[in-house]
Length: 308
Image (cartoon, rainbow, N blue to C red; front, side, top):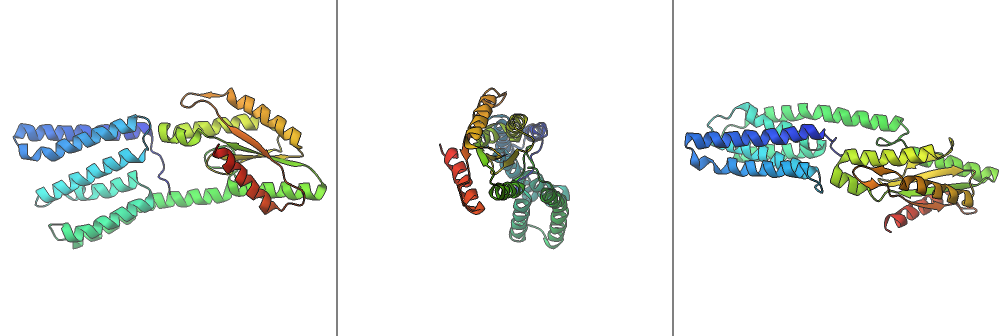
């Protein structure tokens, strides 16, 4: 399960606030003359600065600065636990809440269970009451993301469209393609499918984030839908692969559609990724070919153009 992306400005504010708080705490220790305790805050301030720069920079996966921020929170809590005789419950609940904000649901649950087991062995105080509070808070914080995931699964089961773009998702796409395949076989009609691949999609998400990926998908779908007939079917067959089902279309007609789409897509320029690049190929059903075999050929054709 992928963690829902938080707004970039909100995460930037979180990284910046964490760094400034740690720098302020370090300056307070310096002013109080506690020089022996400066090492850990200094290390955490540098770690938070690195996470902020990675978050603002390009070419880094969004999960890396989140992991650094979460590690900083755990180090702060461990330091407070072992330096104070009776740590405040707020310190102990902070990493539990942070895991559910920064990690996917099952990763957060697993990490909290591992931390609970570690507390039994390492905590310098009675852990029974804390363990019960830890479990209760973990289950309470797990309810919102679990409900969100349940609603998304329900919406996906009832909504024929893909969650990220204006195209059918894979289940509806195969169902509609099967209907057109059977119709073409029974009525002796022609059928063609264009296989489209976006090679820029993975790069856009890694370097520019989810917003750039959504913009790239939206640009492709808008260009394709605006230049196709109403009964043509555009669906997302993979992360960066689309199938455009063209009923009553011969091979020459499919080639004309491919050329028209390639010209239109090449003229589309996005801010983050530049000129829109798409690889398009045709795939027509063979005589007396089964639907399962045809789908396998479509998937093989998509894999072939993805590895060009």
